[in-house]
Structures are given as structure tokens and as C-alpha cells.
Length: 284
Ligand SMILES: Nc1ncnc2c1ncn2[C@@H]1O[C@H](COP(=O)(O)OP(=O)(O)O)[C@@H](O)[C@H]1O
Ligand SMILES: [Mg+2]
Image (tube, rainbow, N blue to C red; front, top):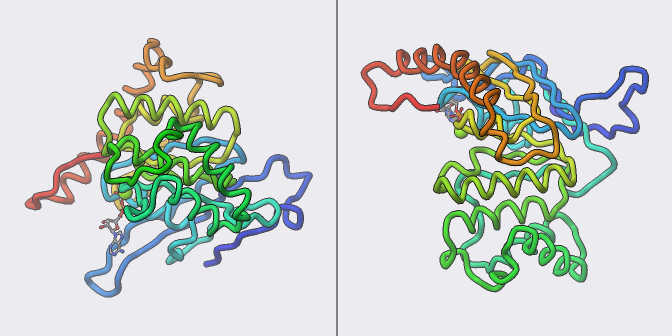
């Protein structure tokens, strides 16, 4: 049970081909002990390559957020091993974007991004320029001095994305970042994320309950079983890059979506059975 942040220079074996950026081996997590313990996740084996964009889908409560927290090092695993390979010695190798935005209401938009840069050790004189550059990329330049409460949900989520990307992380972890956003804004944010992730390839783990969103964005879609979440299927997404959100209009897209849903349906039913008598809705 180890979580290490390895320096690639000292651990990479050049003869072993491309090494995984994130490597989970028999990883799992339980919460609590005794009869009330919840086995949330695993054992799960998953390798995510350098520069790869992986979407993670699975029934509600199957451990997706738990997996993200294990990768981020916010939570230790109960069993198994998580290796996250970081090159060099960057101050902020991993950035996260969660559903609830997580931006500070008492700071301006610019203040939020600069706060993250300060935490990442970026010098004050560089931070302003870098923050403004990322705000501009996400269409927020005119809102630098605004407070979050004056912005729409979609714009607040853009602030969260700008803040995460401004730290120039090697790994970007996004946990249902667009779940609370209306359909049109969501598509715009997908488009922006595609553009950004295709200009500067980063390793991205993107949790979503939308199969369509998973297919539009990712190089590979990983489907998890009902809790405790293990690997159910992996699908390599055949659409080339750069791509845009119009890939969803093609016939192959519909076929892939149906295939994924076929994998997932039984798991959602298993999750419903597990909640028999409860009030929870069966959702992805
Ligand atoms: N801190 C915690 N304490 C107790 N149970 C937790 C905790 N975090 C998550 N769980 C439980 O672990 C399971 C997986 O949760 P989560 O990873 O949030 O699932 P998902 O993101 O796939 O919906 C759920 O049953 C959840 O209630
Ligand atoms: Mg979750």
C-alpha cells in the first residue's frame, strides 16, 4: 500500500516502452470498519498513459470520485498500489476540477486564479500575466474583477478550469465538472476543453455520467462496475485528433454509445437492486 510520486528520470526503464503516467494495481478503498464498513472501490487495475485523455463512467456510487481522490493523493488506498509518475519537480503536478466549482466566493475571478498560482509557487510578478492569459483563453478576460456570485454556473466552472490549467499541471483530474451546467453551456465547455487539451496534451482523467460526453472528449472510455467499482470494459475511441464536438453527429458515434450503454445497463440495474427499498434514484 504505497502512493509515490516518482521522478521519471530515476524510475523510467527506457527498454519498457512508454510508461504509464498513472498506474493503479489492485487499488481499492473502504470507508469505516466493522459491519458498517463500505467497500467503495476495487480491486482495480488501470494504466493511463502520458498525454492520454481517459473518461471514467459507471453507476452512481461505484467509486469514481474515490478513484480520483486516490490519484490526487487526497486519500490513501486501503489496499493496492497507486503510482503517479511526475517528471521533474513541479510544485503543482496535479490539478483537480470538481462539480461544485470550488472557487472562493470572497475572491475575484482573477484573485481565484492567482491564489492557485501562489499556492503552486509561481512568482507574484509572473502570476498576474499568467492568470490573465488563462482567463482570456476561457473567455473570462472581461470578468477578471468580478466576484463569482455575479457569474452564471457555466462561467464559474470556467473559472475553476482556468484556475486548474493556469498551474500547468501534468495531470488534470476532472470529476463531473459539467454536471450542474445546462446543455448548451456544457457543449461549449466541452468544445473549449477539447481545444485546450489538443493544443497542449495533458494526461486527463475525466469522470462523467454522460456516455456521450465521454465519447466526445476521450481517447479511451473506461466503464466501471457497480460498487465496489472494478473494471468492466475499456473502449478505445476511434475518432482522430484534433476533433470537435461534431463527432457526435456521425453514425459510428451512435453505435459506440449503444455498445457502452449495453455494458453499463446491467451495472445500473445491479446498483438499483442494491438500493431496493431505498429512495436513491438509479443514475449514472
Ligand atoms: N468519506 C466517506 N465515508 C464513507 N463513505 C464514503 C465516503 N466517500 C465515499 N463513500 C462511499 O463510497 C461509495 C463510492 O463513492 P464515490 O466514490 O463518491 O462514488 P461515485 O463518485 O462513483 O458516485 C459510495 O457508497 C459512497 O457513499
Ligand atoms: Mg462522484
